[in-house]
Length: 129
Image (cartoon, rainbow, N blue to C red; front, side, top):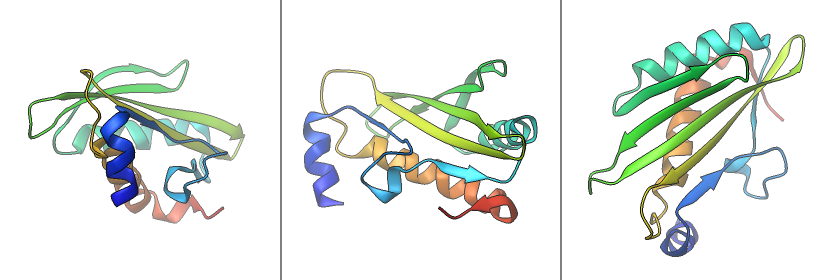
């Protein structure tokens, strides 16, 4: 976590992907069709405390959220639901803080928080890569 805080002094965004070096930032996969994954992800995100769903664009599989930090900064978060094949979907997260200062690792923590919540809700479908 210290390394993240140090990176966070300079960086104000964080994103996941299948090529991420940090295991925490690797895409999460679920044994669900894109449509089913979309429904589950959207309904789960809408119930998360402290997050506000701003837009849902099902055609491209993106949900845009906003979160206010304790310091009053706003974070913009995009959660993408991607079809890997007809029975598997991937979920990626991009989180960015508004403003010029680094985020002290808060975008990293947001990603952990969202993935933890989705993994709990979709535990039966989680694919361990």
